[in-house]
Every structure is written in structure tokens, then in C-alpha cells.
Length: 442
Image 1 (cartoon, rainbow, N blue to C red):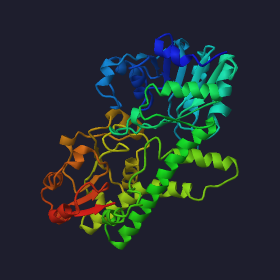
Image 2 (image 1 turned 60 degrees about the horizontal axis):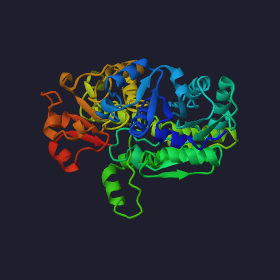
Image 3 (image 1 turned 30 degrees about the vertical axis):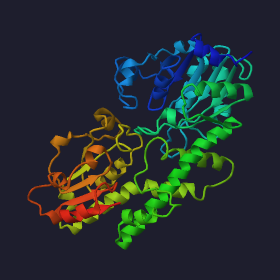
């Protein structure tokens, strides 16, 4: 069976492309491809599908473009039978013990298998450890479809590289790594992605290599941020400003520009566990990656402990204090709350019997309540605070003046009694000092 005609079929409109999974990754891909070819967008979440149909983009990844897209959104899996090129972009989280949770990928494989037609190419974008596509996904699809991989259908892997909330490094401007089970499938997959990827594609020799690219690139970032977080802890003990130290370091040409912070989300805080899990199965125990994860996973508690210390030094009883946290999403200017490490700050404060009040103009109120049990408060309804923790660098928080920040505190407090934690170093040091407030920066 020939597979080298799929690209031409898509271009001429004779064939369709399908997306399985319409979250922060899948939906932008579907919308971009729909500018050039016929696209079916499938997701098991009917609420999400209906929102897209009504021109509502809760992910905020494509904005108004959702209203004009020609993507055929559906929650009916049988519609996948119409497609000859299927892209799978479902989440790959970790379990409570940080081991890979492959249930979404396995479920998507079953759905694809049950609706697969001969002559189709299936490409997985979900982040997995090397071997998952071939060792887990192929057998499931073969079992459900009764079709033989390499004979009746073919498979490839192209790791997603979308950066949620980033308006500069978008889908089309990030070079795409592609791979296929053989040369024919790899070339066809490359041609299809070249339809939308302006930055071009980079072909690797096999699927396992492509899978490794993704987990390694995110593990690299995780380790670098862990180093910065460890530097922040050391600087805190030395009573010097981390941001100033890094600004000095970054004057050298070979500085990497990383900063300390809370490492959450569905990629950097998760993917290293996929890589180390694969290594463990081969008898190798990570010496660096897991230690980096341990440092990064501890930072929420470190920030909360700093807040407690600052409140005590300001002369207040932390248990009686009103603590306000600004931001709960895992990164700035993005509604995504998955694996948010701000929640770790909240949990550590809860251990001290402190119930912080949280506001975030970007986060979904229902999601925050369902996932974390956090009742988000509208910014205008925030109680006056003893301590304010600015945890996320949203543009709304970044643009706040010292005067505006002071208005968040109780009026009876002297400036020196107002405790401000600037986790993302959003505010200038000279302005913080001039404010007279007691402040702390990560």
C-alpha cells in the first residue's frame, strides 16, 4: 500500500487531516492546518468542543481566530474514519508517585484503532519516553483496528513544542522535529508538517530519537532552573539579591539567562520524570535530573516559609494574618493551571493554619476549585492584607505601581509592617526600597 499520496490528497482537498485532543497543543495545530487543508478536530470533552464551535477559546492560544476557523469540531470518534492523516495530541501527566501516566495516550490509541482505515498515517505529538509510540501505541492500535502497522497503516512521532501563552514563539515559528517508522512515512510526515511550519522541519532517523528529543530538551531547562533556584536559596542565606547577582552574571557572553522560579505546567515539571523512568527500567538511576526535580518541587514550600519568616520579623502573628496570593496559573499571561506550583505555597501555608486568599484574572474559577479546592476571588473583592505574595508574573501584576501595591494592605499598618513577596522579581529594587515596605524576592 502506498502512503506517499497523502500530502497531495490533503492539498487538493481529496483527503482530510484529524486532530485527537484539542487542548493547548492540539487546538492551535488544528486551527493552523485548517487554513490550508480540511481538518476534523476531535476531543472527548463535549463541553470544550461546544465552546470551540461557538467561537470560545478557553485556552487563549488562538483568541479571535477560533471564530473564523474551518475546523470541523466533533466529539464523535467515528469521524476519524474520514481522515488519512491523524495527529494525536493528548496530555501525558504523571501519577502521584511521579511515574508516567499513559492512560490518556492509551485511550487515544484505542480510539484511533477503533476508527482507523487502511492507508492512514498516525502521528503522535504527546510527550512520552522513548519507546512508548512503538511498544505501547502500535500494539493497541493494531488490536483495535485489526490492521497491521507498516502494511495497512504507518506511524510517526513529532514532539509538540508549543509554548502556552507565548505570542512570539508560536507553532509556525518553532522548528518541528519529525520522524517516521520508515523513510516513506517520515518523508510524507515532513511534507505535511511543512504545510504550516514556516520555520521548517528537522527530520531525525527514528521514532525513539524524536521521543528522546522532547524529554531531553525539557529536562535541560528543568536542570538549569533548578541550579538557579539553588542559587536563590544560597543568596537568601547570604542576604544578597539573587536578581542582581544574575544580572551581573548575564553580562558575560556565555551566560544562559535562566532565572529562579516555580516550575510547574505540563512540560518542564513533568517530562524529566518520563526520561528518568525510562532510564530506571534500563538499570540507570539519574544522578542529576532527579536532584533537579527535587529542588524545583521544593520551591513552593521555600517561598511559603519565607513569607512566614518575614511576617514574624514584621511583628505579626502569621496565624492571624491575612495573606493574599496573586496568581495561580503555572506561568504568566496564560490560563493554564496544570501542575501549578503556587498550590505548593498554599499547601505549606495551610500547614501553619493560614488560609490564603487567591486572585488570578487569567485562571478559570471552576478549574481552580475542581483541581485544587481553591476558591478564587475577584481582584476587586480581595480583603486588605498583612502579607501579599505576587506569585505569577501576569501583565496585570507587573504593571502595578508601588502605590497600587500598598493599597492592597490594611490601612492601619505602617509601611514597615506590610510584607510583600515578589516571587518573579517583577518590581525594581530601587522602587521596592523607596516604598518602605518589608519585601522579599526569590
